[in-house]
Amino acid sequence: MPEDKTVQSLGLDEYQYGFSDPEEYFFRTPRKGVDEEIITMISKHKNEPEWMLEFRLNAFKSFQEKPTPTWGGDLSDLDFQDIFYYIQPTENQGKTWDDVPDDIKNTFEKLGIPQAERESLAGVGAQYESEVVYHSLQKNLEDQGVIFKDMDSGLREHEDLVREYFGTIIPPDDNKFASLNSAVWSGGSFLYIPKGVHVDIPLQAYFRINAENMGQFERTLIIADEGSSVHYIEGCTAPTYSANSLHSAVVELIAKPSARIRYSTIQNWSHNTYNLVTKRGQAQENATVEWVDGNLGSKLTMKYPAVYLTGEGARGEILSVAYAGDGQHQDAGGKVVHAAPNTSSLITSKSISKGTGRSSYRGLLKVHEGCYDSKSRVECDALLLDEQARTDTYPYIEIEEKKVNTEHEATVSKVGEDQLFYLMSRGMSEEDAIAMVVNGFIEPIAKELPLEYAIELNRLIQLEMEGSVG
Image (cartoon, rainbow, N blue to C red):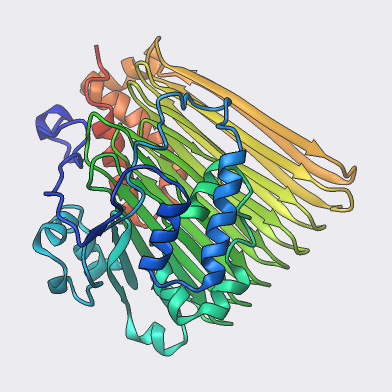
């Protein structure tokens, strides 16, 4: 942020991505709500194999049987039958941005996606409503055997590979929202990295909801074969409406022996969106799975990225930062399960609450019997910006093996008067002083992001903090 500008002087609204396009579509399910007829219609429209339709219908039975969670956030206003479950914005996917309709292309231009692609990305997938409207991958990666497709194209073009791994890390009956996604999924990413291939430049997917009362249910499956590595980044926004929107994704990561996957998210949904996501990775022998998770937007987020360490020497790391402003509840955290010896994990969670905002850390650390010489550390820090703000911590630790080393540390703090006095005595305004304290608080997370995304994370938090003084 320029030093000579305060947050207010930027003249931006609290949520700068709340604009919308005219609602013009190639295809939309004829009514709101979900049932077997709608699910079958989606599957037939996509011309899917019969096994996928069966997978969807079985998942829907599980969704119906599972009660809506009463823990976490307040879901009482979420009406599953007041949502459109599938909208196809264009007939075909664009191979260049010129192939994308002007309204949609202009939206992604405003979001900076084509510019990011030109400057710092190896490939991009841009999803608008239920389908990916643009997709690209650098040719040198294609030549090395890297497969980066939207999930529907992955199913059509690599059916055997998808069928082998789809739903194996997050089964369709895992939880109510994973069941719903499994029943109505559309779009997302399918990424396969061959043995020994290192994708040095990040790949990115961007998800945009435009329509009112819309649900987005992308599905992402990433497989890093032996000794490979990749960094995948996702971002997301939506217009602001008075009615609720729903985003419920499923993300499955498989890091084979000695592979490494880093998955970074900057979630900035509008404040009328429920963000109910299931993310889980498996790290096999000497493999590493890392989640870097920024949660800024949404009405309610319930998201707990997980790593299952199934091979000896595997490593998992979860870094998360959440910001809860007025009317927001960020119920986030992380889970790590040690299922092999000599494994290690680190969970670092940072949350900031302001006004009537509420942030919660909810996490699980489990070490199974026989997982000797494993190490784990959980660190949760919460920062309250005023007297109204609220934070909660729900850590669960289950240790079944004696020969392990685990640590847990939690802190709650407020922006101190001494800190502000010191900074303001050096000529800073109160608002800039608070911003500096917050930037220092989230610095351990921001430094793990590519520079341009770290700057964006800092800038978004600055904008969300508008009016935090007084």
